[in-house]
Image 1 (cartoon, rainbow, N blue to C red):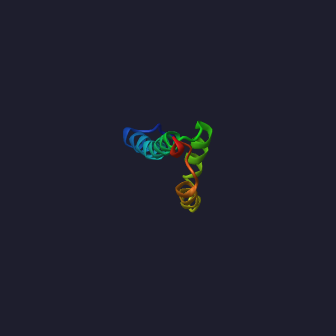
Image 2: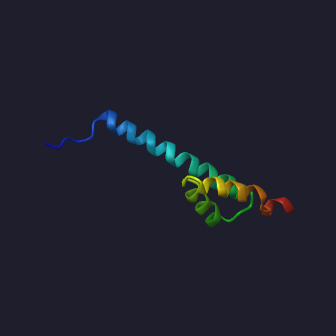
Length: 71
């Protein structure tokens, strides 16, 4: 017999989704404030979820010239 999601299961799913989405929003905002386009910041945020890729991207992001540095 299949039962619907209870309050406990639903709250766990919502917490997991919040923990996944919140860092993506923060990463995208940081990239946008650094002067990168919104399409770059969105892809950067999505790719930063992947293990090892996030370390490589962080390394690249730290050493490439930022568009806002020249202002």
